[in-house]
Structures are given as structure tokens and as C-alpha cells.
Image 1 (spheres, rainbow, N blue to C red):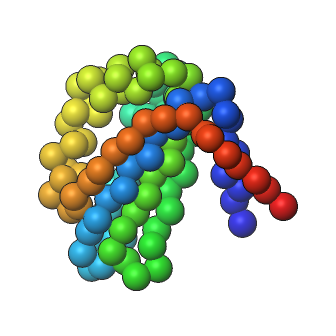
Image 2: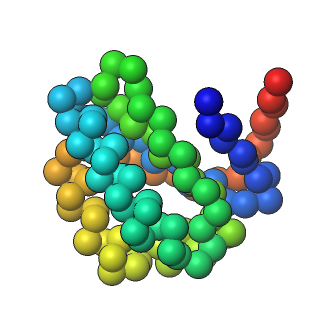
Length: 106
């Protein structure tokens, strides 16, 4: 099992993508490709985890960034903007940035 490490000092970006179950695998592959070729190269990026709903209808992206300015720079990056239509073709999404308010681990 892979652990998700969350830094309370970082800005956390949560995206909930809703898709058709038949599209979830393609969406996950597209997101992995984007993370490996674009996101991981951007200044201020710390980590990204993908959570695939067992019913196939959603994918949750939890990513951490140095600060809100790094999130804005990612969203404005032309390479990232090129992915947005491809992601939108597979899923509707909602996004929220904030700070970890509480976390507990075993």
C-alpha cells in the first residue's frame, strides 16, 4: 500500500473528477501521463496521489504544492492547459485548494 504523506504547511489541491465507469481507466492513464510529463516538472510541486473510486465513477486527485502561487502557475502553464480539454472529454471536475485542517494516521 502506498502512503499519502500530507504536509500541513503546503497548499493542498483536491480535484474530484466524475466520469463514466467505462472511462475511468483511460482517465487514470491520462492523469498519470500528465503527472509524469508535466506536473512533476513544475516549480513548487510536492506530491500527487490518485484515488480511483471502486464504482469507476470518480477519480480524486490530491496534490500538494509549495503555495497557492505555485498552483496558479501550474494552471497557467501551456503544457497543463493542453491537457485540460483532454481531461474534460473524459470527466467533469471540481477543484478546491486549501490547507490540511486535521490529519491522523495509525
